[in-house]
Length: 326
Image 1 (tube, one colour):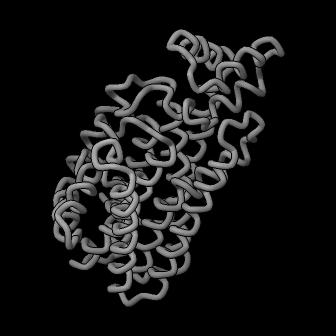
Image 2 (image 1 turned 90 degrees about the horizontal axis):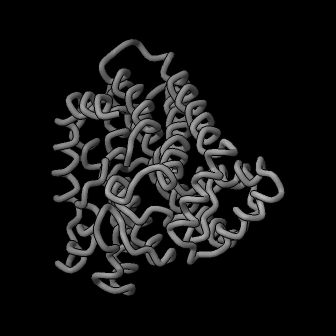
């Protein structure tokens, strides 16, 4: 994993530096407090994957222009807005290794800052003067909201199916990554075939990232993950490793797993017990295999493009999505 990450960074560091500069310059709030609240999360070590994908997908289609970098801010602003709102809804305590923004600045200011970031993203999208890009951004915000609501109404429900889970993560997480790839292709005025290939690449990549996150909740440690281990489970989110293990478990073990899963105050010992049951019934391995299938599908959508460093980077990103440790 470390080797892939280092290789990627060496290939895209210049792009990441330009993206970071764009984020700083495009935030432009009227109040310094808004910049402080947004920056509490936005400048706390995010991967910048979504903005990077816009640059790479435009580039692989032959498009390079200064406005591309400005447009990348849309997706980081949207991503940060969703995380600020999520932490309020989930009553989370930690994000990226530090207290959540609402614990530091209060709920009202945090929610309103998320709203500002959403509005700022839409305003930058309008500067593109591309109706299609505006439509992509508007559709993403709609899908993300619906995914969040779907997850909320199924909170703590042990009957959630794998199909529902995939639908939720596609809406909540995948749509931002898919939209970034689609936007890069639109900017480049790519052919319908190339635009579709990059959009499908982004769709599969988004699923890989979320499934990998859900696996990490049971395999990483708090330092690596940047949040409390088992936090998703305490928030009532049933993810793929648990969904599969519950389905595969014996009646006795399923009953024990259910008792742990439905109790948000489970102990450390109970969480360790659950981890053991997830391994016993192949929940972790199954989730990895599902994600690996989407890695292969993402890469397959790159086959129509000529060999290039950009294509190599997009392929490496798909590998990194699954193999990362945080």
